[in-house]
Length: 468
Ligand SMILES: NC(=O)c1ccc[n+]([C@@H]2O[C@H](COP(=O)([O-])OP(=O)(O)OC[C@H]3O[C@@H](n4cnc5c(N)ncnc54)[C@H](O)[C@@H]3O)[C@@H](O)[C@H]2O)c1
Image 1: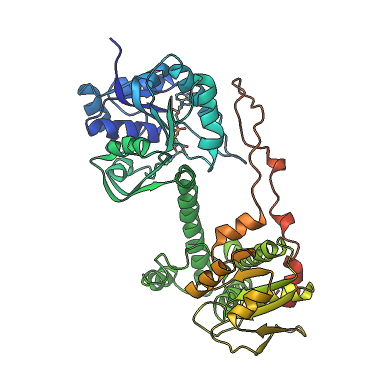
Image 2: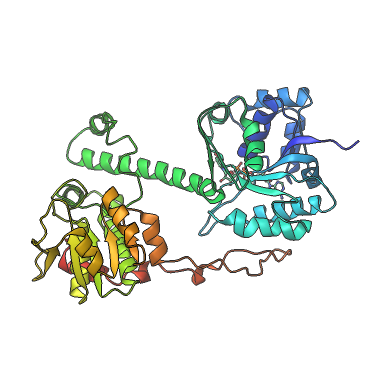
């Protein structure tokens, strides 16, 4: 008799084994697939193939209850409602996706002669776009079936930490599911029925894929930041733990979602000045602080990208909405809007602006340049400009932009729009992969847009407005 499984899991490393054992713990029938006989043997003997608190007991319990098994036969994919992929994706320079390619081809072959249409949930960490633009084609080619009909592709990233993996599985910050159909998402979500999650998020496949890169980079950034600050504290004779206590005590601005929403560059009287101050201090003390030193260049690059997005519309006259460094204030110090206006005017492009804090008719100075920025009524700015640029998150500006919607609108308060305008991503070209199915893979590295080469205005800007 052919067995039917609720779940099969490809890859019995920490992620695959913990997932498999925790699905079995909730009552599902689970089988694991690996190419490493030692890992299969371990599971069959009722123990985990690695050290992790609590996992041996769960594996033993699952095997004894007949709900957890393991083997080498990839064809079990055709007998499962959900196929979870948890093989390795090591990165040297670029991610090595060859294990994933191979598994997807195997799953495809398994589905060739089957009526079963499983949800294939990728739990491995991958760059966004991998599932839709690469793995889906591999499964389609090997199975001869269409995604959305003969199988469903989805992303279900894993957020556990080794050492507390089992506890993290059952008590997690969030379950993230990226699926194109509700039914595919429901089938994955059912696997977490006994999990206590702060949030259960349904997002696009790409957002789910991206989540793990973003999380891990953020965690790495936090460690590096804490260490740089600690080094500087030691160097001036302070106590790093005291500095950390003061910093961590602020849960409104420091440990919160504030300052973490993608938008436009920072400016104003404090942030640039004090980042410069800390860089100087580290240098004076002989402390290496590459992370702190990279903040201002990153901000400048962001301003340059915004400027390039505006220039890409080939404007003769630009209307800027919001000139203070942020909305609801009149502080012009190190305002990114002024940096942009200054560059446009230097390039012989006409500029007029509106800001609720300034009266129409005022002419604002632009750093140490001879130029001035004319403030006008909003409709006058929009009516006379051929490109509109929104710098402040004010409902009135979004409404105005909608009214003048036939003109190009560069909304710099929404970073993604800016990036899309400036660097519309080329679709990834299918090229022959080294792997035999000839499946579509991403464009080679040299074909991608070069970030640095796209910032022609940066050095000019530094000279005129931004501090060097
Ligand atoms: N380790 C973590 O803490 C963690 C946390 C979250 C996400 N992740 C991600 O999850 C993925 C898996 O991580 P891991 O640490 O468990 O990986 P791992 O490298 O320890 O284990 C992967 C397993 O896949 C098996 N495998 C390779 N090709 C196979 C095939 N064709 N068929 C069946 N099995 C095959 C390997 O033999 C190995 O046992 C990675 O993408 C990783 O980045 C890891």
